[in-house]
Image 1 (tube, helix red, strand yellow):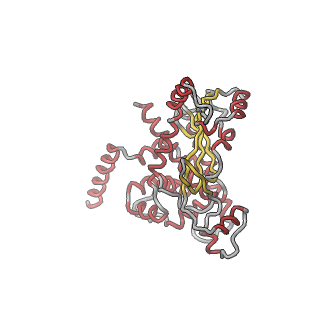
Image 2 (cartoon, one colour):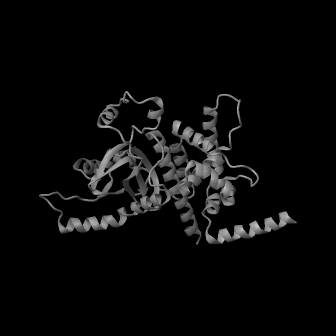
Length: 340
């Protein structure tokens, strides 16, 4: 009788959550999670060389845990706690109410395996294929931009920084200290302010506002250095939008040679300001180019202020997950409006 009472209560609660717009229900319904299984299990087979020890947790369940972590900006410890505390989180990852959530170290180890084998790019491309098969192919041209991703600032001396830039480790750093130091992040300046960390370079299709390609670099790499690498030849339209940082005579000539139509913002200089016609053209281009800023805004609302990881390899995984989660949410939105 008591079980029936609790069961009916949870049924009512589930209906209420669905009416309020529970995003986890939509993600579970719209995305083919089991299609990731082969990719994730091949990673476990590469990593585990012996049958000794505890059995590995279900790989799709662990992957969905990382999606939750990024979706709600949780630390590893908070991820364990919230899954244990919230029934909706347990339902999402496919964990029965009576079972304990994987602990923080298990999630951390799983994420490290993704980083070591650079698997997040494979998972991102797999979901891109899933979106294409659902009818959301790249169309109407592409937009390219980059955003800074901060990491905790390293308090190093000038001598230590000089050695790090030369690819050397300071002599007085022991093994424990070197593990806590990010020697791959870099400083850069933007609008007169200094920033330390990495960059998320993305290419977005104008038609569906989905991220099609991305590249992670340290913050010192200029945006235009990865411009050609990000271009998507599969887009049905040859228009390319970007801000003025990407514009140069060489880039314009190359785009023309490759039969792309440049919609890159023009930039003036001290002795040659933009004409009124050029300014008007920039305003027209901005109406399309600004769509990429909506993506960066959505991502910054979800993530923590700074990445809590060390090294570019792990940063690539965190940033890749961030881009993947955005695409999953956007895909669900596109599916919702297509039905309505």
